[in-house]
Amino acid sequence: MPIRIDEELPAKQSLELENVFVMSNKRADTQDIRPLNIIILNLMPTKVVTETQLLRLLSNSPLQVDVDLLQVATHKTKNTSKEHMLKFYKTFDEVKNNKYDGMIITGAPLANFKFEDVDFWEELCTIFEWTKTNVYSTMFLCWGAFAALYYKYGIKPIDLPEKRFGVYPHISLDIAHPLMRGLDDVFYVPHSREWELSTSDIAKIKDLQIISYSEEAGVHIISDMECRNFFITGHSEYDRDTLAKEYFRDLDKGLPIKKPVNYFPNDDIKLVPKMNWKSAGNIIFSNWLNYFVYQKTPYDLNTL
Image (cartoon, rainbow, N blue to C red; front, side):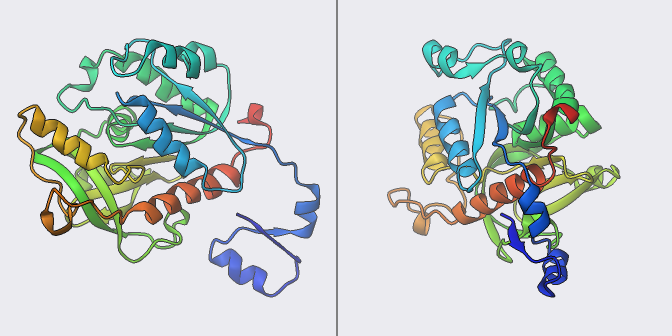
């Protein structure tokens, strides 16, 4: 969050070079403050769990954040009650005339489908287009990131020989990037996906930059050059037991699933996993809210 100091204080220039948000007394005295308006398109089947995970990360800020929950009207959820969806979720028709400071589009368990075969693909493409004029900054997560990269840039996901499943070490490829500010030299992120991205495909797009990477898990975060869109392949929002629940669920179904990598202590499924990605997740989401939503979005969203 911003610090308020005198305009002529010698430290001001050094802090600004470090991407620290320094606010002069004059600006602070004349600043209008309002809540940030964030909308979450929740494509996950476990709506309530995902809501809780994301709202927990968005709440880790002194800013007031007003949140709308969005569903796709062309797909009926089977794992969340109709009452919950009617009470808490809006459809695109209900929000299409609104403006938002930020948006999060979640993942979905749809790796077995071609994008065009997904029943809500046409509606999702409409939402992708709508974000260009109605949302200042958008964060796309996992399947949402793959879908957005395919739609916006024609980048096709690559099938993995087996599911990338576990908690992996990552590094920042641009330590000066504000989204990476405050992260350790090595930080951890859970992954649960059957696709990956080619670095060469991304390199062909001048508008894109890979800002974090894992030798084991591959591309993690991609930013566009305006820093209005972030494509994230991992799941920093996951709870301690999310991967465990997925593992045991697939075992019970008789599906071929290996134990999540770097997750259970001593690789013993009877032991409680240690959560070593929580701080990185909080930093990434807080940095997004601060540097790319709060500091960049116009006060009057009608001018977006």
